[in-house]
Amino acid sequence: MGSVGAKEVPVLLNAEGLRIDGRRLDELRPLQIRAGPLRQADGSAFVEWGQNKVMAAVYGPREVHPRHLQQSTKAVIQCKYNMAAFSVDERKRPGLDRRSQEISKVIAEALESVVFAEEFPRTSIDVYIEVLQANAGTRCAGVVAASVALADAGIPMVDLLPAVAVGKVAGAIALDLKKEEDNFGEADLPMALVPQSGRLVLLQMEGHMTEPELARALDLGVTGCRAIYEKMKAALRERYSVGPIPEGAA
Amino acid sequence: MSEEVTAEILQTHILDLAAEGRRLDGRGPDEYRAATIEPGFVVTADGSALVRLGETIALAGIKLEPGKPFPDTPNAGVLTTNAELIPLSSPTFEPGPPQPGAIEVSRVVDRAIRAAEMIDLTKLCVTPGEKSWVCYVDIHILGHDGNLIDAAMLAAVSALSGATVPAKRFEVGEADYPLEVHHVPIECTFVRLGETIVVDPTFDEEHAAQGRITVATDEAGRVVAMQKGLVGAFSPDDVKAVVRRAFVHGDRLRSQVGGGRR
Image 1 (cartoon, rainbow over the protein chains, first blue to last red):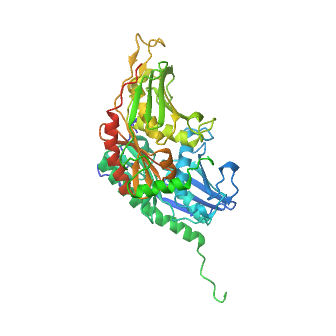
Image 2 (cartoon, helix red, strand yellow):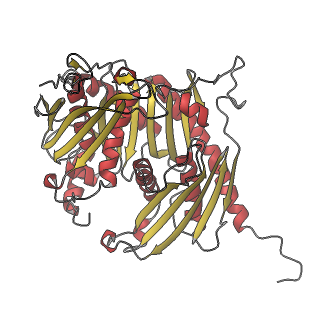
Image 3 (cartoon, rainbow over the protein chains, first blue to last red):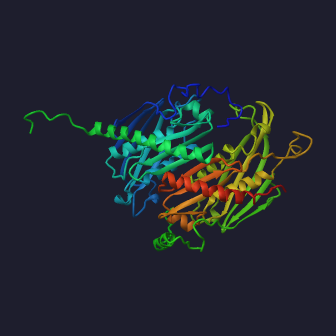
């Protein structure tokens, strides 16, 4: 995004309309979701999405720390999004930076929009998102992982929360940006959708788009989210499906 | 934050009013509070502006100092935006390191300034890789009656629009010169109150809100940044509608942005 003093811009869209990794404009990167990979957590999920690797764990409902955050009418949803030092090309200094804190805030708010928090007053539902390998779209991968982990923890929710970033790449509106497209593209628009209501609970945007481009991006993102939603449900089904009952077992 | 409670009865009242298209302070859903901008409020700053949005008060001060460019952008100056929600402006603000709310304000303002390419950072480079200007945008929230993002942004762009590069003071050049401004991004924030989406929310409306959305537009007709905040949801059609409204408010507010030069 207007990166000043940036290196040479790669060809983001070729003559056939294909992207840097050969995808079409409306094509997602390969996405694999595994529900419940962690034993200790109340719920967990691992997401491999393109070259992103993101783990999420949910603890709770449990006691609130620090205590003063406790709410008498509902659970507080606390989210910590963190990038591992080795997750990016140049080592990231460990610890909470401002970017992580902002992302943690918007993800917590998005999750709280779908969780029935009033079912668990005076408790905390703690969501940890750890980015192990990053290649653009980590907050969306984090939302997907966190929401599958919440479901895995058995926390009641309105719906799962599929998320994806749409952007503008070499003048075209494209689904699910990868790193080069995010760095050298003209706009980035991450979003999370509640499939049941068709409403967005996470939405950010940076770059520049005209009004019609923005409208197209929103529609493309919603379509993308619906495809991701199917994979999230499949991951949960796989985790909780039981094999055929052996004959005579009953 | 636990004391931060708008009485439930007030929230219900705000929502009831909104359902009829009315608001507590008598405004309509698409009515923005009167904004006043006082450029050059702080003479010690290289650019400044005090913005009032109803009872919300934001003060932005610009300071430019010679420093070192970042290694990955050797040909560019450095822009740093910081918002302080200082304890004097609200009983809910506490001293100490910036809380997520303050970080969100700074980052949303910073993002719009960068994405709109308001300042050409390459012009702030003095010697590539060695020396460049560091432009600090510090925003103090002095009064909190809601919509801090818009107030902070108006203050920041007004202050930047009239800022001076103190080249002579730091012996970088012969004379001080005005900071060049290329685009003027304006943020416009809405909250959902039931099925009504109102612009420029007050403190009480933010507490009753079911979702907040901010859209930054520039004078070239581009959307340059967006941020959804708080618990709540918006449909894609809601988003498209608020973008339209943001352009209208943005154009009007932009005409108010003056120079902040002392």
